[in-house]
Length: 352
Image (cartoon, rainbow, N blue to C red; front, side, top):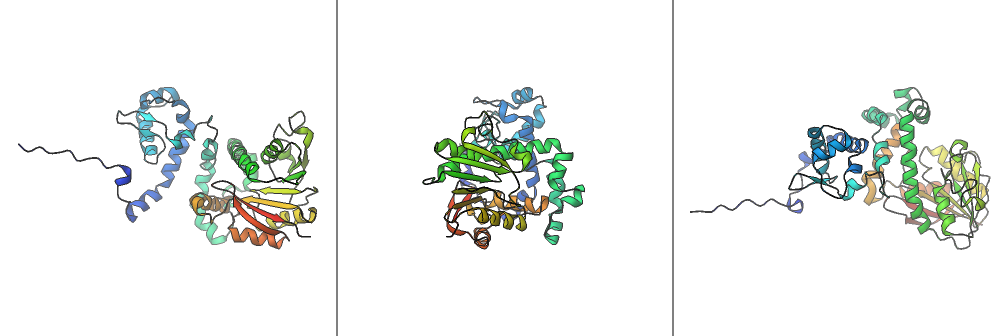
């Protein structure tokens, strides 16, 4: 009697690379993947899944959904490494699914929601129009500019935006504080620094340093509690309402400009020139940005670059484009260093 051995199931590493036609099919269904991540984040699936495996039925009970559609959602996400299905038919966390938990210290829940907000589904199909015109399609879609729309018509989306930016800023602020050498620095200026998370992290690490946060009045009013009156760092921090595109009335040893030189070229030039005009010879100016020619994160940064084109007509930089704009403003770029997987710091000096 002949015994037939079962065909072994190949591991992911043994599977062939998808053919071009299959890969393109997967890519054109990219919206389904983004929508699945958004659904999981809004439903809170990652939050209710603990350290023990759980069935779709158990998870559905916890989030108040139907089990069969939830199992279909989890099956789709598992294809991308977001959750994993066991041989017993239960689901467990993966490194990526944990990032959808709100309590994870590196949570990307609000970033995931922000990048899939309702307005994005209206804007992406107009990308060809934005490419033809070279400008934003937002005014044509909604009858007003992007930020006016957020704050006047899309309050929930504005809340998601604020949470996403805060989460991202808090996480990267620690990396910036770890990277920068403040030897010889007694005053730091955080230009357009939002709530001032970078400044707060630097002041916590360097007790002898003072700092100033400059941002628009509505933003500065919501500064990190550590910097505001009664906060642990308030005695060494000044919060200055203002628009860095108009003037930078701050004298400091170190100026930090992080993730604000992407809206449009005119704003970039004015901000850099205003910092250059305010800074004394020898002062340091550190510009921190995502780059679209940074190979490890290009899929992410080029996508952000296209979204900026759609919503505000802005653009992410290449290393050379940012070097050129800094040089045009009269800054001498001394080095470019990675801050983390997505950000680079351009260290420059104001010439004597």
